[in-house]
Length: 249
Image (cartoon, rainbow, N blue to C red):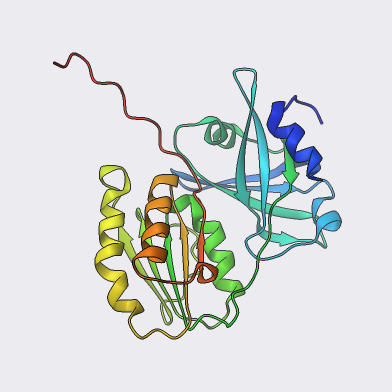
């Protein structure tokens, strides 16, 4: 592939990762902070197949160093060899690339580590804690789990975003981002225990920033005693460190 990827790329190659070049064919600003790119897959779907919540690693140059981020495939179409990628825009190299991307631009992608194991037995109810970065994965999950009802804590404003939530069986609970995600943690801790009481086969899906995800996944397993196999938790992004204080004692 075109760019050097350092130790991360070397490890992925040893693990049998497969590399492809994606070509942008269309770009759409869904909202000022959410952008969708349609891409030609460079043979990816034919080579790997697809599954729910499938994701790829995209590679970007960052001051000469390799920088990779994972993105969920949206509306993959093996017949045409195309899928979409959706970017919640913030500060960062991946968002910068997505903002500037135009038809004809290319990006390198690696497939390794992606998998989806449907919970058995099927969920009696899904409890999801997500933010805009995890929306494509949530949409894929809801489609894969069929008729299961869901309660979704969504950090941020879902208005205008491409959500597949069905109001007849999916309850969306918007939560503003405050205090670095602490407000979301408080809301879930206050509301989830009563919802889980008496639930036969719950399934908990937590995909937020790494700090929130780690905190809530530990809480759900250790304090609410949801079995590990009924909890999916994956940090989707890492908050920027707070600026150092000036002055002080």
